[in-house]
Length: 361
Ligand code: 6MZ
Image (cartoon, rainbow, N blue to C red):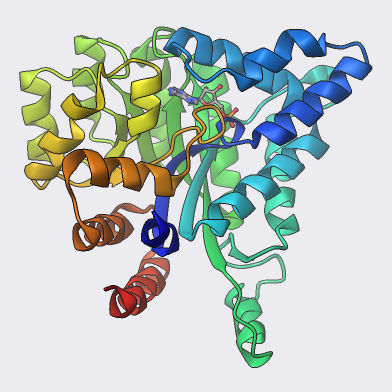
């Protein structure tokens, strides 16, 4: 476990509100309990519960959103989530979140995202590069140069953002999110994710917004096949997104399509087992894809909700499928090829992995 922790890692499928520390959620629940907004004792066991069905997970998200959705808290959780990933040597994080509108507290999708960016700015425990250029137009890398000049070496993390469309949303709401993503490109927004309760909503509702996003040069990742839905999985694969998440309920024909298209898969082992979308870890499709040399990346999905970390996901894969240090290192390194950030970031990350390779043994 120690070497998996110290190994550089790339996280490409992490939902902001699913990655919150339990201690923070409990603190927020206690505060809202004191204000009489919720009954703390009712929600405490819901937060601490470990085994949840997929249905229960989405009920928990509704609760989490009650606890977190004000600007100050969004800023706080963003800062904490980034620092938590960096603390276990995640060197590149693509963090996704659903921009939320809440008229009663004066929150628009844009002000929600500004609070997220504020959280990135507030990161202090590690060095962060979250945008191609900082607001003054100077490369953020200056910050790292300063550190080198000062003789200090601190952990550094690249963070980029994906805006999620929730499957509960209308075409117009999805379009609003895509337009916001375009406006926020200078703040490190690289693409769009389609997520939310997989039994809700229709692919045709989101397609116009996703097609618009693609035409404008945004990159796209889709939650695909998290529940059985043959027709949707086929339509999603025909759309040729840059990546897909989960890929649990695929049939013969869809595996063929996926493999021939070489679309990288974001694999979330613990999430799939906890929500019972895969019956047991030894039959997880990771093995099949890995053996077929199909592009894949291990991810946490919701490290808070599923009490996991990226190191734990690597450990689970290594111990279940009998993979050694070198194989796990290669797995982490190949993920650099599937990031949505530009070639400059890719080169920096490759340099980090090359350095780490020398220390491997
Ligand atoms: C589908 C998921 C998910 O966006 O509020 N989300 N969507 N499948 C999953 N597998 C378990 N886990 C999380 O983060 C929480 C939101 O991410 C999506 C859901 O829409 C959830 O409400 P944000 O930061």
